[in-house]
Length: 218
Length: 224
Image (cartoon, rainbow over all chains, first blue to last red; front, side, top):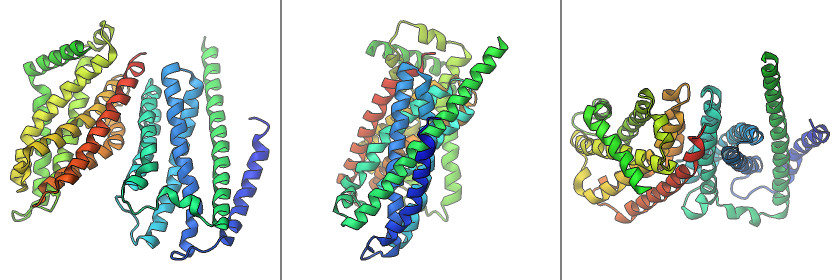
């Protein structure tokens, strides 16, 4: 592992410990009150979910066309994190929706597209695990479709009239809400980078172990 | 390129017409699927609202999965896939030929399924035949575009029968949703054609995205 990993992990832990205080100190939203606070974790994890799907897609494309195993390992790691952060989004979203819309789930364009992106990431992992030899390329092809879904999730709320709040909400936030939000975004972004590095490291070790076994056989 | 695609389509159709294996099994499966839904959902001659649209598309998706699994399985069994890939033909042309074959097969199945669903669920499916054809064909192309790519790739994978739906369904969710919504709209007593037009436009857009992505990735994916 690189030298910067442990200090940054410690900083990230401290940031996560501090974030509830910032979120608690931010103003209450006029109509939703306390429930709105979940947004400070929902939106950052949603962004990371999309970023992660893009990382997975780009790495897969490079693996597919250039064939370097380094990118394959990156794509695998990113796919797992897409599932992880997608799970956070899909849990925090309904918790908020229950109060704001009165229902846990709506078949709204953005929700459907997010769920689909999450399922594609799951399918990616299933193929990698159970597909046998050659499945890495197959999964890479799948990741490209998963990436094509991302802009769709992002713009869907602005083009379709849906009940999910649009992307234009973010710049209009009052200062203290914005500060809490951007702090949470920084927390999640750092967490994503750390986890990605850790996961890629694990795959590198695994690949090294495999090649050691191979050289032992020869 | 178009000529190669046409030759592959003609080859597949010739093989298919000789045995009619995929056509019969797919159709039988789709029809039994619709019958099950009819047993389960139609009570005292009354079908649930909007049921027909959903069931039509479920039958198409299930039958499509079956047909997709078989087309490349046939190439593998007779060990002609290698020959096909070694032939001096552009990979995208092979893909397009295979895709057209699947679409032709599914459209043929739909010609049986639509009257059957209309009959069993008392749905006025044939009141706007041209719009329905547009919805079905654009939806089928979108579904088959992804399906052809993945079933071609899965030929070498270990548990290909299980993995095809795992790969195919999450990606084709938008196609199925748009298809179902458009078909359901066509079944309304007073059809809002603007809405149907919107869904068809979405389907065509998805077709373009899926076919482009598939043509782009087919070559590296089919190379060892």
